[in-house]
Structure formats: structure tokens, C-alpha cells
Length: 240
Image (cartoon, rainbow, N blue to C red; front, side, top):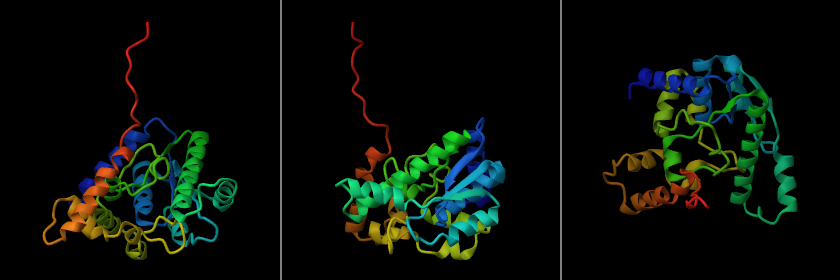
């Protein structure tokens, strides 16, 4: 991968999509995806056109996210989403398991990002990478609810490479990927594979990877199609 060439294309894409607006709003978790997007957006637009929102649930650790906003010098706000999520979960019957609650949290975060974007006349910039988008590892209308995805063409393993090239602090690159949906949650454990295997399968580099692994990823890929398309709409003849 020609890092500088790829970075330039992403920066041009960000400038094109954010053109005419006051800037972008980004949910910053301290994970590698939001960190790389923050880095690239600041390079493309300047720090004054980036607003970061840190949205922990309760006592979730925000030190890495704070490190990112400090290093980049961007304006930010910290909003604890626990009161919102707990209030909804308490009065509804649909959020008893951790996956359902995690999806609720992702959708609350999306709502806050769009609230800020509407007020500031900015766009919500996404953090989805190609690996997760292809297998549907995101919440529909949650972290998938964005205006554009600048790293959507990069596999997760490539995001790590770009991060290293950009000079992102090493501890942010090597930390275990997590969506921060509940304590102890990790992406690779939840998916069932590490990203190196996922990316090889998605690229067709299956080699000696067990067939059952390939089949499982392909099944996830197929099941994700509804997340990647606009909702189907019934086409009718114009009524006369």
C-alpha cells in the first residue's frame, strides 16, 4: 500500500464531502479507527473544522480519547450516555441483553452526533473500515448512521498501517479493538476471528484457512447486505 498516495486520496475525499459545510463532527473513542479519522480530518480541514464528542457509558475510560483530542488540539465535549441509555432501558422491555443495550448505546451516540452537526451546520464523519462494513459489524442507524466513511476503503489491518505511518502513538495502535459497548467487550472476541484472518478471507487470500472459517465470514458478509443499502421501497404506478 502506497501510504502517502492513499492518505492524499482520503484527505481529498474528506474535503470534497465536507465542502460547503462548517466542518465535521466525530465521535472519538480512543480506538484506532476514530483516531485515524480524526488525524486525517484535521490534516484535510484543519483543527478548527473538527469537533469531537467523547461518549462514555458511565465510568468507561476516556484517557485514550482525551489523548487524541489533546494531541490534535481540537474542540471537544464529553457526554456520559449512561443516564440516557439507562432511562430508556428501564422504561422499555427490549434491552435486557448486552447486545440490545449495546445497539441502543450506539444509536444514542449517533443522535448526539447529529444533534451537534445540525446545530453547528456540519457533517457527521464516520469511522467504519472496510473489514467491519463488509461483514456488518456495526449497528444499523448507530455507528453506521453517518454522512460519509473516509476509511471505508481500508481493511482493518491497513488502518493500523496508516496509523503507524501518520505517527499515531503506538499504544493506540496496539490496544485491543473494542466498540466500548460493555465492560470487557472486544471486537475480535465478539466476531470470533482476529482481523488478520478476517482481512485475508475478505481479500480472497484463504490459503490454509479452515473452510468453516471462510464459510462463516462469507455468511456474515451475505447477512450484512441489508445494512449497506437504502431500505427497499415499493414501486407503484402513479395513481390517476
